[in-house]
Amino acid sequence: MMESIKEIYKIGSGPSSSHTMGPKKAAEMFLKRQPDAARYEVTLFGSLAATGRGHLTDWAIEKVFKERKLKINWRPDVFLPRHSNALSFTAFNDMGVELDSWTAYSVGGGTVIDDFKQEETKAIYELTTLDEILQYCDDNGLQIWEYVEEVEGKEIWDYLSKVWRAMSKAVEKGLDEEGTLPGALKLPRKAASYYTKAKNFSGKMERRSMIFAYALAVSEQNASGGTIVTAPTCGACGVVPAVLKFVQTYYNASEKKILRALATAGLIGNLVKYNASISGAEVGCQGEVGTACAMASAAATQLFGGSIFQIEYSAEMGLEHHLGLTCDPIAGLVQIPCIERNAFAAARALNHNTYVLLSDGRHRITFDEVVRAMKQTGHDLPSLYKETSTGGLAVFHSNKKDCKA
Image (tube, one colour):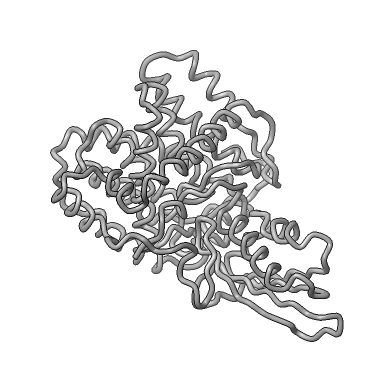
């Protein structure tokens, strides 16, 4: 059974759901278990250690332990079998005797599990494939968002309303900010200038430019440690809000319809998380930006009146056309190529919507099949392409201080 879609949409601070939000939450959980220890030791493994400094992992953990004695060990060469984003905590008394130890895994989207716990919240969805859900909706005359309401209860709309407010605020703040993003790359923000230029255009040029501006705004907020919503992760947080803001602005979509689209998109993300992974450290960026594109594609198609089968087709394309996408952040920062990938994934989501609405919804590869293919592809990728910054752009970009991307 799958968890609530609330696990897909989490309001928090960037730059990384798996490297910042997850470790911070794990630290809080362990400190609650051992609040009075004399000193603490945290060991970061695999991807957490490889790109943790760029993702502010150590900063997030130190912020939890505050003035307490804390030592952080970095083991990028060690990958625990359960997940590549692993970290262990140990507490000692004033005699140096170990009081407690615990290993946690930050599996993406800010979710933390351990060797015994599979989910953070109660599993509520009995149907765990989109084929099953479509069949149920077709048999009962339901839209996908109605199925979400049936499972989650009407209270889900209050939660999604908070999510949408946070997403909208991230867009607005990102469009107003200028200057340089934190980190060694000294990457200049682009959203504000893109927004200004977009308003000077008209027609298709204005609209295409605006979708870029919206996505850049949220992604830059994330990169600077601002408040965003995982959708499904921090690194891919700009895609869904950009598409929804675009449809709301140019097609006068009501908030009620936006929230219903968020419900459908959340279910799509949930299915990927349950049947594969949304963690870049486990399956590469196809699990992050690819899933975000699938979510946004489904949301857009619903908002434009597509059938449940056209929604499935749109989501399938969103993920299919990102298969094999590696996670190779330069300098371990959620900036290059992450920010631009959000902008282009948002534009592709709108393309998928147009393509699908021209069809009758029939196609050969199902969403469930492409999810399985993505999982296998991710497992076949070498670790250097999965958020370790040891392959791809991260090593071929020779002069990181003079990046123009």
